[in-house]
Structure formats: structure tokens, C-alpha cells
Image (cartoon, rainbow, N blue to C red; front, side, top):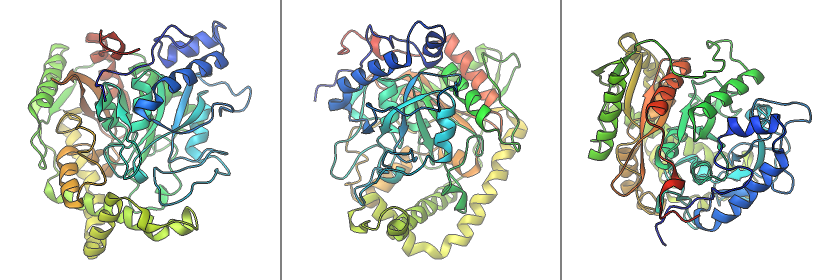
Length: 473
């Protein structure tokens, strides 16, 4: 396929506005929610054939909060990821192993998401059960990166990132169990904040697991959209165990201690990504922050333990699919990654007690990082987004697992420990793909991350996909 950037920006009701700006246009009567929805649907149809980001549509009957509920982002069109129940729509989990049926009721997070005023037009594609770091499938078209369609859009919120990056909507739901908000944000040049565990309404199934890795949030094109979403979501539910967040509206004034991490015990960061992180460190120093080298207190054993827990999740999916998902669930139709992780867990399941103990202890080690640092700066990924096929579930399992470990070498720490992390656009690879950097903070300190993100965005606004001359509009 031609490798020109693909976007749907144009002279319609959505324009080039972010979600905050669109909500203001709705509030002042300059545009209606219906006009915004119609424009988003038209944009989605323009990119669908080439990017394949949508799992199911609700174009004829968009979902929103009850009439009169309002919300800070009232009237702004969006999509929900296809692993969260929304009444009347199927939840397919990206899998061919079962036939998804319409959900009977909303998941708790879906209600929180709708409470912000967002209007859901459909659901976005994810790799099977969100286990892969690229939104690719054994027997279906992949989700492609709008910046370079021959390459991965990341995962597991790859469909969401493709829609936001290509201009279909300004904001979309994403969730993160190993980097699945931050990875596609980095691949597609977006802002992606994984909140502290418990900041948003927890998934019902996750609460029953030994360690709940998954936290819900959004991917956006502006920092203020991410901040506005979290503030609006907090009005629906605020976790009393965390400090209140409120609406963060700009850079902070305090000088921060920034710990710089360039490599992971699992992988050496590629030169282009390293340069983007080092340039970000220099920018932070120029703003008056103190940047010093740091080291993550997690090594190869952490990675092995995370992989076994990842396999444990695949084992549970296969073992309970008929009970939880559908009576017609067929294990043999799971993809190669899910089945490979399951087999690996079955071989090593006796390690489970020790793995769980060490992973739970990791939270204390993570907290210790922030005795000396306010923020940790690192890559999001060890190398630039790979071509489609590199992380396909059809790759031999041992090779695929090795590739994943050498790619996703930073983000899982925040999932195991529950700490917040944000991916921000920070550079451009030689092939034109975005490169992201990652900021981590102590539990409950999303405000620090958002304030730094505001400062970086103001000092050097993100690249825009629609600015390049050869982009096809």
C-alpha cells in the first residue's frame, strides 16, 4: 500500500479542534452534538478501508449519558474500546474464539466515561484480549498507523489511537494493562496518560484478579483534553484513597527533580528513541528542572515474572471462556500469542506463588524511586514502531515473545505497581513515525505529570499529521 499519511481533517464541524474547544462550541450554540457526530461518522468512513480501526458502529443510535446529565465534554464524539461493555453493543475482545453478543448493561467505567458528556459512536479494535503490543490478528486486517500505514499503530488501544491521530475524533477511550494507552499514543503521536490504579472506576473482572493491571483512560491530541477528561470523570467517581485531582490547566511553577532512564535491563534503546529522550531531558533542564541519571529497581526477574502473570491471564481466558464469554467459545481458535502464553504458564505454573509475591513487592520498590525524584523520564518503547507483521500473532511464539520483551521494555512497571505514567510526542524517526517519551510519578501524582506535559507542549507544540504536504486528505 502507498505509505502516505492518512487523515480525515477538513473544513467541517470538527475542524482541527480538540475536545475542549468542541465542547465550548456546543455550549455556546455554535455547533450541535448532532453536527459533530455526523462529521465524525463521515471522517470515519473516509479512513476505515485503509486504517481499519472500528470494531462495531453505533452511528444510527449513538450512546450518551441520560438527557440533561451534561458533562464538561458534552456533545463531543468519541469511541469506546471493544473490551468494555456498553449496553446494546457486542464486546468482541478482538477475538475470533467466540461470537460476541450485545451487552445487557454498561460496565461501571462505561457509565463514568459517558458521565463526562462524550457521545459514543462505536467501539474500537484491539488485539485478542489486549495481549499484544500491536493491533494485529491471525486472520483479519490489522489496524494501521495513520502516519505510516505500513507500520503498527501500537496496542492494545490501537484502534482508538488510529481514530484520534487521523482526526476522526479528538479523544477516545483506551485502557492499559502493560502499556496499552501509552504504547499506541507513542506510535501515533498522541498524549496517553495511564492513571494511578483506582483513579477511574475499576473493571469488575480486574478486581477479582490477584493483581489488577488494567486502568482506563483516554488518548488525545492535546494535554488539556486529557486533563479535562480526568477532571470530568472525577465528578462521577473520586477514589477517597487518592488525593483529589481536579482540573489541571497549565504548567506548574515548582522546580522538579527528574530521574533520567535511557535503557531497560531487557533492551538497549535504539538511537532515535534515545535521542528523543535526551532532547526532552535538555528541554526540561532549560525550564529549570534538575535532571540526573536514575536506574529502575527492576531487572530481568521482574520481566520473567510479568511474562508468567501475562501467561496466567491467557490461561484464565482459555479456561473460563465458555463460562464467562460464550458457550460456543472455542479455545482452538485463539491466536498464536494467546495459546503460546497459555502453554508457557502451564509449564511453569508452580512458580505462581513466588511470582505474585515479588510482583506485589514491586510497588514498594517503585515508591522508593520517588524519595529522590519527583518524576522519572524514560522511553515509552525501546524502539520505533515496527512494520506490520513484525508483531503478528502468526510469528512463531518464542520469537514473538522475544520481540515483545525487547520492544515493551519500560511500560509494564507502572501496571504492576499501579503508578501513573504518561506518553508524550517528543520526536520524529527517520521514516517519519512519531517517537514518544514517558514520564512516571508517585501514586496519585497525575497533577505533576500533566503540569510537565503542559509545559513541554507549550514550549514545542506536537507535530500535526495534517501539516505534511504529501498527506492525503
